[in-house]
Length: 201
Image 1 (cartoon, rainbow, N blue to C red):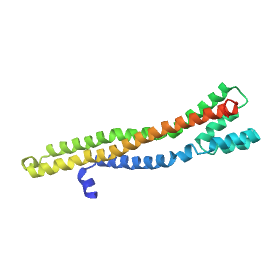
Image 2: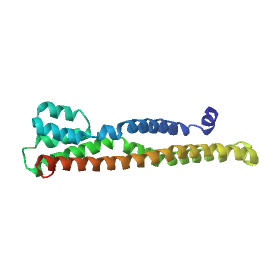
Image 3: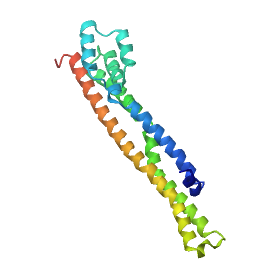
Image 4: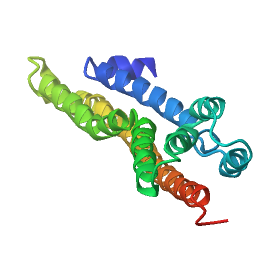
């Protein structure tokens, strides 16, 4: 592997850096976007039961804010529970937008790596081809040397694709997860509003 990196030349080093960043982002988002951390099961029922028993307390709000993104959405709504239904929903929507933005953190960077990695690989290949054909040596008269030089130049394109394909797969997967979790948070928040305002049982 090290010999391939050496043979590919200096353009492969930015690709190596991009691959390290992509792996780090994928691991970080895989950990952060777990459903149990974003929308814990049973939280709505627990919050409604606590509200009906004790009302809204500072301890309850603090516990919810430190619990999860869904908990922060619920806390924003319960802070305005004495206001109208519309005010409560607006507070929940603001907290929900903030939560969605937090969930989408680093995804733009991962998508950028997925988009530019093939271009970086192609750039490395072009540099390699320029070096081959611009060399003053007699490699142009030697088909074997020319074929070897072209294969080395293509290492960059291959490496760029190796980075881009999984990065794009995970980027799209994470985007889908963020959308799904955001919708689930919205649905649970609407249920909370309806339950505390007596519109549902």
